[in-house]
Length: 188
Image 1: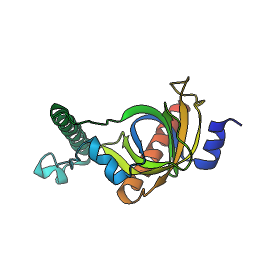
Image 2 (image 1 turned 180 degrees about the vertical axis):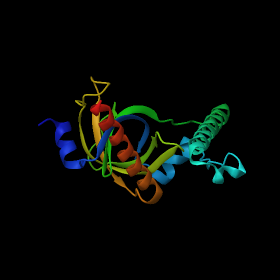
Image 3 (image 1 turned 45 degrees about the vertical axis):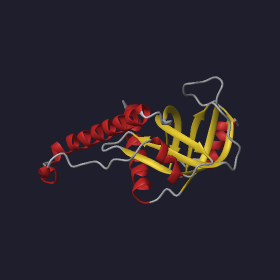
C-alpha cells in the first residue's frame, strides 16, 4: 500500500473529494493570526433591500453578486497593501483531498508530523466560503496521487482543529454537493 493509500485509509473517511482549491498553510502560525497577513475580511452585503424576499429562482444571482463583491474587495485590499510596500501572502490553487476529518494537499516542501499551523482554504461555493482554522500535520509522503502535478512534491495530510459551526457546516455541504456531482457525472 502506498503512502497516499494508507493516508487515505486512516485519515479520510468514505466521504472525501479530490479537487483543486486555493489554499494557504502557514506552519507555526495559528489560524487567528494566519488570516491577518492574507487580507482583511469583508462581510458579504445584501445586494439590495428586497433580496430577502426574492423568488427562489433569483437567489443564486444574489450569491454570485456577493461572491464577486467579496473577491473585488480582496483584490482592492491586496493592491492597497502592496502599494504601501507590505508583504502579502496569497493562497495557491493546489490539488487537495478533502474530507470532514482531514485534508491532504500538495506542497513543494515537506512538513514533519506534529507541525501545527493556520490554514486558509477557499471553497467554491456561492456565496464564497473560506475555512480559517488550525491544521495539525499527521503525515507527509511523496506525491503519488493521480492528480496534477505529479513529480517532485509532497502529499501533506493534516487533521482539522477548531473547525466548528458555520465553517464545518459549509464544508459538509460542499462535500455532499461535490459527491453528488461526481456520482451524476459517473452515471452518464
